[in-house]
Amino acid sequence: MRISIATVLMSAVLASCAKPDGVSGVRADARPQEVITVVENELLFFDPGSAQLTPTAISQLDSYAPLLRTRFDRIEIYGHADRAGSTADNLKLSRLRAEAVRDALIARGVPKDLFIIHAQGEDDPLIPTADRVTERQNRIVVIIPGALKQESAHP
Image 1 (cartoon, rainbow, N blue to C red):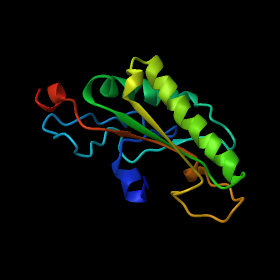
Image 2 (image 1 turned 180 degrees about the horizontal axis):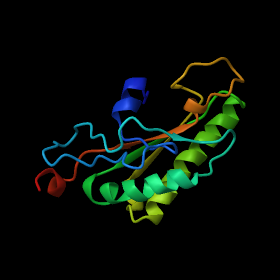
Image 3 (image 1 turned 120 degrees about the horizontal axis):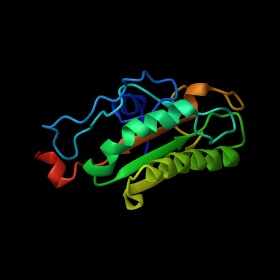
C-alpha cells in the first residue's frame, strides 16, 4: 500500500515535536471507514539509525492511546526510513520503528490484535532525496486507525 503525502497529512500521525494540545479527538458523528484525524499534521520523527522513541513521542503516545484503545477495529502502523543506509538496512529499521510504536501502544493498553505493521523502508518518502542522503522528515512512523467500532460510531 502506497502512502502519499496527502494521506500522511490527513491521517492520524504522531510527532516528537508536536504541540502539547495536538490531540484533537474523534468526532462523535464520524462514520466507519472515514478518515479520522486524531493528531493534526504531526509526525513522529526518529534520529538517524534509531528506532528509539523520544520522551516527547512517548508523551504523545500517552495522549493518543486512549482513543485507539476503544474506538477502532484495527490500527495500521507504517514505518519509514530515509535513504542514508542500504535498502535492506532501511527496511529493517523502518520495521523496528513501527514495532517500537506498536509496543509502546500495547504497553498503554491498546489490544495487540488490532495492529498491522508495514515496513516501508526508504520507499515512498515524504521528501524525495538522492541515495545516501539523510532527511529527518523521512524517518517517521504513520499510524492510521481503521474503521470505527460499531459501538463507537453511535455514542
